[in-house]
Image 1 (cartoon, rainbow, N blue to C red):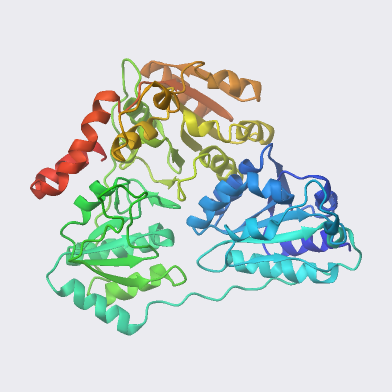
Image 2: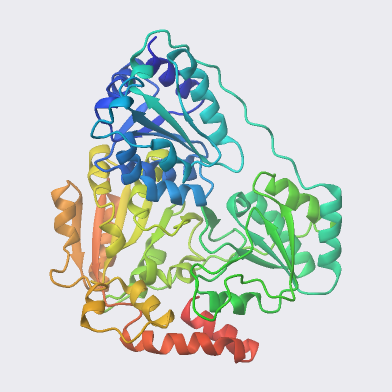
Length: 551
């Protein structure tokens, strides 16, 4: 074997069966080796951010890593944002980055760069440059093991061209990751005592704690002891819908999160971090846990969440308690002129069971959570790292991982343009994806943030940086140019018909919805005032306002 062939065999033997690629000259021996391994599926992306985001979406749904293949430091740079999202979501990815031959780097050729420095941003736990063909198989096995091991990570393996083409490659056997431990007896006893104290307690679930086994154990504790169930603001993957326990997501806006946490005295973390504000704002706290609240950790990201919650349930006498499950409910079919809430309503009305729902609708998705909570059981993927341009690539990866399940991706117009090339990959692979684009011709969330940060009155130059008019984008035409069936509509009935068609015919499909901003200029003016007032309002009033603005 040459090095590339040894790498390929090691990947497949270790359970990595899909590679999302955007190769260049340095990676040609890896590309050639794809034909030596029939078990490896190669999916071409036209932009590195699509490849990395697709690997992220794949791993979230497959529960195992895919590989990426990127071209040198510049290709890694192009794919960095979605690797950042994967890192924040604790998603396993084997990130393979080609490099110049080892003897060529001394000449500082045009594409020479410090790949290791760039890679450390997204791979602080495993980043390695393979130095010899004979070692490449072992390096690959260790990269896969690092990616798979809890908490899950982006493991970057840098592949010099001569290490790839050199003879003497040896495939390495898979390395089994260590089994996660459950919470120890002392931790469980201390948390059980806090729950029994009579003070308000809440479980904050993140990561793997938002899957069915952990959710059911947490719901038993909630039913037995009156504990509140919270989910992190942007879950990596949340299993939800009719027949599963409902959890309340922590709000994106710090002021609203403060309302949710105001009277909690014991916050119990399960594969989650204590909540912090997404950004810093003048005169406002960054750490959102009240000063009167004690934070406990039941299970860290490297521990067994389901086992730890079941152990706590046993300690609290809740092991056999019936959990409260979400009742089945669909909203009515919307009518009239289309707006963002009506799009969310139609999705909830029509989505099939086992849908994979990808939410990067930003402000247009404010009503998605509440509209779909009683829909048939589904998975929800969200923007874990805040770097927009994740949704369409995630849809590619999720559809590759689960070809028998419908994927519906709800995407804002601004974020869609970051990785619009994903549509071409959907068409090339014939993926079962329906992309719904909210075209409100605005970076609406930035208009909201402009008001919240207390910036000076915005003039025409400032406002123009947040406006997508002139020209208004036409996503239906863009999609058709990349081989995706697409329609454009501004009527609720037209949207419902388009979605019904998409869900009953092979994909991919794109539905462009022409809608007004969910938070128009008047609402944006009022919102900062409302947010400032929340801490001073009676708690029931504050909670009602929070539910009205962001249910």
